[in-house]
Structure formats: C-alpha cells, structure tokens
Length: 117
Image (cartoon, rainbow, N blue to C red; front, side, top):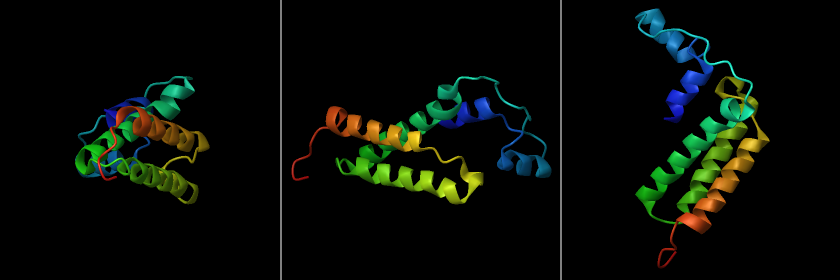
C-alpha cells in the first residue's frame, strides 16, 4: 500500500527503477505524479504506512516486545543513510520523531507483554 501510494504521489518519471525497466521493455507508464501542496501527504503519510506495516510484520514474526525497538533502530539507520546518499531520499528529523512515537504507541498500547521478556 505504501509503495503504491509513493508511486502515485511522486510519479514514475523520477524513479530510477522505472526508467531502467523502460529502457529494456517500455511497459511502465511514465507520469509526474499527483501535484499537491499538502506536506503531510507528500512527506509523511508514506513513511507512517511503511513503518507501521514493517513494525506489525516483524512483531508478528518475532512475537517479542523488543522487536519494536529493532524496527526503530533499522528505520533510524535508513533515515540517517539518506544524509550520505541523497538517492535514497531526504533526511528528515520529523520522520525519526514519527518513528519513535509510533513505536512507543505500539509497545505500550498495542502489544501485550510476553512472559519472560
């Protein structure tokens, strides 16, 4: 869902993977994406969706409360990697704060404490 929303918002003209696919076989429609000035939609909604789905996925597999902190560490690492490689995205401190907030909500309100952890 988050991937489809990202493609819909940002379009395919600027995504390298779609350019490479079309160089081999021109099957991907190229477009600029939806034009909106809503910063929440263009900058944060996709991050919230991918992070929440990844958090749920990992917690379903590992079934431990600490798994949420593993996901948080991974997301923060990905965000900081954008400082050194702009092709990966744009570093944003608000994204990290959103990841921390979602993790805290998930750990304290959604997950149940496991016996022995």
